[in-house]
Image (cartoon, rainbow, N blue to C red; front, side, top):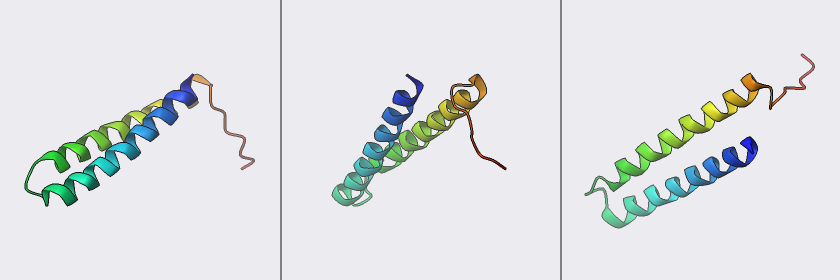
Amino acid sequence: MLKAAIVLMLLATVVSLFSGLFFLVRDEGRSSRVVNALTVRVILTALTLALIAWGFYSGQFVSHVTW
């Protein structure tokens, strides 16, 4: 369940990235929609990192690194 939530958050981040690009090209920087897309992208990235950290903290994700 947690992995699916992380994948959905990453997909939403990519959608936000391309919507920001679309607004940048379409509006030529005259509106605040690019800034809003950036804000959404930063929030989604922070939530994705928080979900990954929660996965390691709760034991759902385990690192198998030998070092």
